[in-house]
Image (tube, helix red, strand yellow):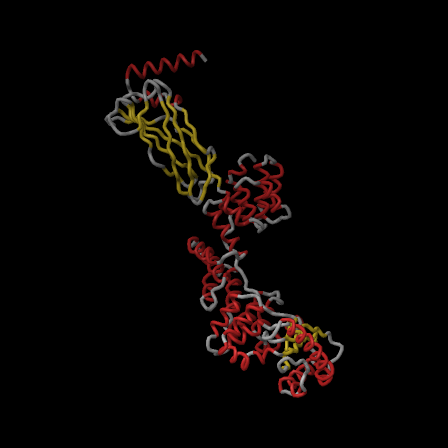
Length: 551
């Protein structure tokens, strides 16, 4: 140790004695270097590092100029970074000064554009020293190794995108209702015979009869709702509506149900003492003078007594209400609730095969989901698009095209959509992703809102751009390859392992191998790599992947 110190001291004296910059090159081992990180990592297509060079005292000649060049050396060649120029304390220039007496440090950040092959690379620092006038040049005999490179794990991100399908609104059971009513005279609760002979009642009776005999219709229940108009006292109206409910029920059972030949159907009877809701609807639909004033009273006061008083105070208006609105509110409504049994899956499948053009839009959109072959789905969606100009059908055709990486074809279908839905913007984004236009993809995804597929696609873009924490948050719960990758990139290996636990495919086995390697379980990593290497591209990648350097 003493001998080594003595040798350095002697060399330093020799440097000082002669002031020859060439001696700095000969004593290159005296210089120390550091680099952060020690293993380079590519993020968003860039490889960033920060290196520091430390010079001991009595090393840096006062009349010397030193140029340091970081160079990325890889199989495809080499790329030089920006030069860091340092000078001795007697050089008259504007570079960073290193003291001869005390030595010193210098640091510099460098960024390289990633190029294929840099995943197996070395970042070197090359040094050249000059005299003060830069008329003499002396290259250092060795290059300083700064870091190994490059971790490119983020590049495993799946960027083909997840297209989204539009759902159908097909109902296997459709609820239908049919309604009629009888009117009462003021302050009366008996159902008049003429009210049971109106065309409206006759039509209602026939509809009930037809529904009861229809093979696809089932009468679920009948409702009776009796009302009193909102004029008069609340106590009177309460009794009046109750009596009207009883008389309406009696008329329905003895006349309407009997003529319709319907029996044993649940009958629900209720009453509303003062029909303020119906009152408001009729006023809104009328052309009564000062109707806005009436509506304002209804919105300002919730107490029925106050409402009635304020409206009656408008004497001219109240007479019109009494003649044109209030009589229509003295009523009992009859409502039939019927379930219509729509086409079964078997019936739909047969109709699609035999007579597809007879089906409506919803039946076609649902029917497409009953077929396994993609070509069959395409034909059904095309029928919906042709017959109904269905935006949802065009969207789903685009989604199928995107699954087959046919971005141009997908954009052709999307251009025909009249409704620009969340799925439209998501699928436009997927097309842009497949074309490598990630900025356009991000713009469209911003318009897709909280759509599940849009979040998955945004998560992929966040990984690509180096926002790994943002990707973890966006992909949370997706249980996808990209969610596992995002957790690996944030070193949340436990979460990534839970997502990948049941997976046995090549691509997910590759991620599991990375986790095992990071945890030091080399034997498991090797086993998982054997599964992953069934994919030729992954086998080639693994050969140069720094994640597996210790294997």
